[in-house]
View (cartoon, rainbow, N blue to C red):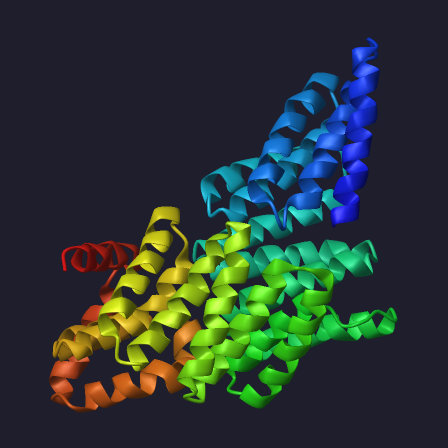
Length: 391
């Protein structure tokens, strides 16, 4: 990555000298801006959006529809990482319209895949899965093995968030098989995606092996995001196995790695460490951490941080002795397969909440669960945030 940035800086220097000599460098400059944006999209998000924003008007001025569509893709991805889904959706739809007019099937498929990611992040899991499968079909028609792998990786992640953990792991393994067929080495991204599904299936020993390998590979490639996800996997399984000290260490290291990226998904290890801190007895600190996670979810209309918090807020209600409220929130949480189908959530929260439910009369528990099933998740998150802020 550093070498790519250095080469692009040299290219920029050449263009600056040509411009000072009166040459028209708009086409070359637009391409360099796009290349700079793509080069730092996973590491320097503000820079990526800045460079893409400089390139977009140049491509439009030059009448380069393909350059415009590609830059819109990059801008959209940057806004996804920042949790700015309305802007991302707008850029992706503009890109998709141009790609279809150009009959660029690969560009069309990639943009549909990105729209699937936006849908997933906002909780439209069925729509996201459909978009990923639509993209995957085009990739296979084009016989683009590389892009097929990328799309399958995104699909696996969406399947996990849908609570379809067996299918998610099977999909991740399809990617591994493609890597093997192409004679390629294991990829930290693919290992991390499979580890996510496997952790929720309760295969903690296997996850430890996968996450350790992913961490080693990611460190060799200096991929902060993948380092962060591998550390999170190690942290959550340590927590499930009740090694609280190790769990907190891994999760804090995960937060440190992901904080470099300004990515909305930093909220996930923050949520996970809140569970650990509560288990260590520091309920006040755990509540404060969780409040920051809920705020990230509500501010950005991002569903994943909120889903992650629901069992924890139910546990907090139980800690306060409000068992009916705990079961209401548990009823809401159980509407999500990511929680109800998860061995990990059972081990760290849901088994304890089942005991709370068993401690109150059956009719009271049933009524509370029914109320929870009727609750709106976004309104509930806002209300919980107001409660926490008022403490």
